[in-house]
Image 1 (cartoon, helix red, strand yellow):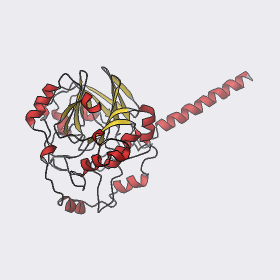
Image 2 (cartoon, one colour; image 1 turned 90 degrees about the horizontal axis):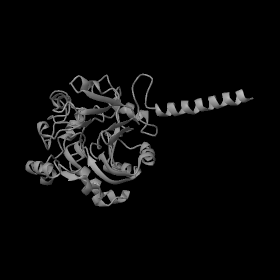
Image 3 (tube, one colour; image 1 turned 30 degrees about the vertical axis):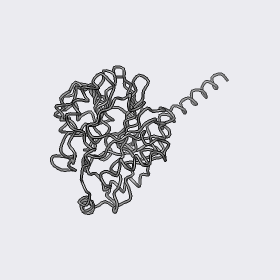
Image 4 (spheres, helix red, strand yellow; image 1 turned 30 degrees about the horizontal axis):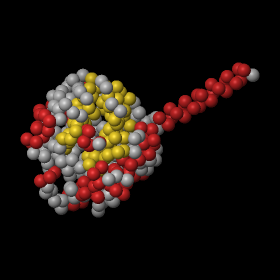
Length: 354
């Protein structure tokens, strides 16, 4: 009888562990590729995207020519002010926007760079969308970094030339699975590939890679062969959620329950409108969806990223920040809690999350 009870106990625990592992590895497919978390836009939506259904380069380029790329004076900080603010805040925790999804985040003695792209275009060689605003700093002008975070492999986030020319090869690099080779082949010495929910300690930081609703591709034959993900950065009791490009999905309610509240969510608010080809991207949030994710994460503040640098879609270039600010109150945020930076703006973290 005792042996039978013991056997049933073993089988019960094996069943629980198997189910837990199966759930944890849901995003791993048998062919070695990856997929989005449960509750994300369906496989059909992705297959339509992969096959180009509804997509037309001809129509996109025709519509793209209609976009008025007039840069308001308030959108870009003067270079002298960028340098003076770097000096001003050098002993503070701060966030600096270099452009698009490239940020410098200083926490204690740690300087982090996210998805650095310093090239003139987002694509191989001279192909791909060209910048209409320069980076706030040249690559040679950025302060010394200790940590390099890469969210995924799209050209507007993973820039081969920036990686090759990066001046601080001793920086620790954290990437989602199967992206490490791009760094080790360029003489980076400390590269760690992470799966979703993996945690890494770095000095007094804790970094966790979390699920995102997106995809990966750099060529015609490598769709979803590398992982993508959001980074949760924890330091001295504060939490910063740095989003990979992401669409909306049920996963964010789950992440909010497990990891919230979040002090600051940094999330994409551009590259969502593809009319007249199709209504919107499943894999880039609208400004309203970005606010909903921040709400799901129980975030105190939310900062818009991934806009104002490249024409990746067909919304007017200044539409994302306007919609973001105008709709903040509808998602439980005060207007000033939906934060829009100038390119080159540097603010102390204390001022941002006060």
